[in-house]
Image 1 (cartoon, rainbow, N blue to C red):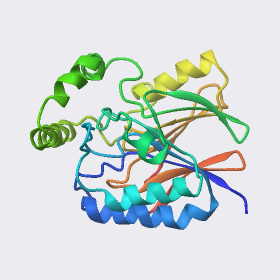
Image 2: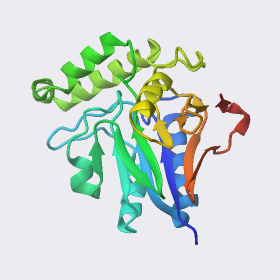
Image 3: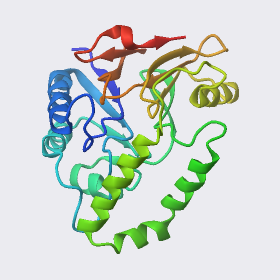
Image 4: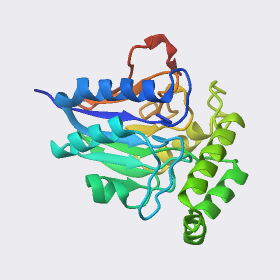
Length: 256
């Protein structure tokens, strides 16, 4: 059987949206069950959880079905690559110790099925967004992590849930296409494609399924969309990458 590489982002488990969080979790696990047998690798490209902080002996409550499926995939020796996003940047060593899943903090360059990829969540990349970039630098500092870990988990995780909800309400992403010149991740991909030869740029964060041919006429930028509304994901099959939708219409994708 020909094996495929799958990419998904922005599950935002823990937050209710188009589907309630627990129902959406069941849909995601159902999707993972259906692709299990032909999966070569799985890339989870950030904001898998709507909030996350790992205390030494505590993690956020819930997500049992999803975590169990990750364990099953790893028990079958399927590599899983998990990226942090702006909602779950405080992942430390739990996934490495429990599942042998590496946590990736920023964009990475990889060759997969003979194609050159640049993969990342996408937050804080591209021009502008100076305020968020500064906030991310502060929150990523080891002293910030140390200080937050001093809070009792009952208070700390509740505070994180509230902060995450406020972030989504303030519009940390905006689900409409602004055009090539105003899309920060398109501009980031254009700059990177001028520095190196890439076939595919794969990002999340924008919550909008996008397929954009870059100005070099060869490289493509894909935004994976999300599972809070679109239930979209990427699949690489024999070097060909495409966006697909699970139980949602394919017409939701924007192609430029």
